[in-house]
Image (cartoon, rainbow, N blue to C red):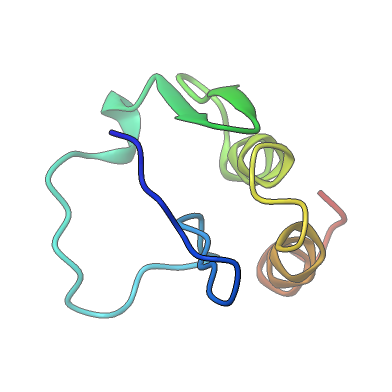
Length: 79
């Protein structure tokens, strides 16, 4: 579904971690594709580092650095 976001406010939907108590309706293993306006990430069968790398690549360009830093903190490896 298209979403209009004004110039003053933009919030990415790809986040480093879910908040405690966040409603999750599927398991990690069931997700095959994540699609954003910046690309498509194929996640099926990927490990956590590979998933992080793929999701960072399709995140909003302004969010990629912060997501990369969060991934580094979590995995202690550059993704």
